[in-house]
Length: 194
Image (tube, rainbow, N blue to C red; front, side, top):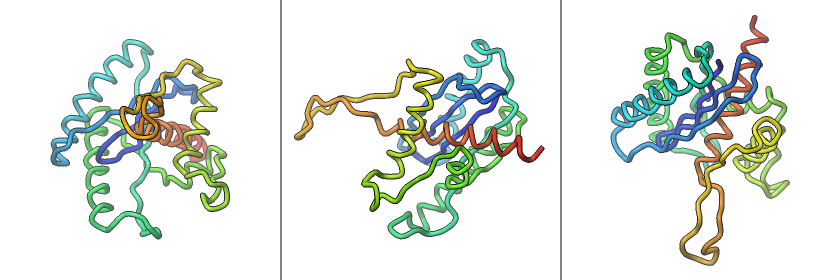
């Protein structure tokens, strides 16, 4: 089994693929507002439950873990140095935890490289009017429409404002979409290394 992770300090997206890169399941874990070590412990507890249920359902062992590597350069309008350091620290904690849980050394894949590997061509938002996150989510939804048409994308209904009572995608959908890209890119990357 191949597992892809999109790790942030607020939501962690996880996608499970079988050994042929067929979609099995995906989750988003919303982390508590606490210290990074407390968030890592919370995530570890949740992952133990998911891995345990997964091994019963699919009877597969985790063979590959792929994680979107944290950004290493400043981009215009991007994160501050403090935010980047915080994310890199948490990413490292998660890598250690996953290695300890599964005996699999996680591989890292750059977000842009991952998108290229899966054939996802991102257009500039200025050109197309659609954010990168939305383009990735559209790709993921079209992929799962074929492999898992009943996948329950998390939704929420707005309770106030001009769009009151409108049902929209939860922010966690973006993390699930990113983890799907990472898992598929990891599969392709590992096959090209062999």
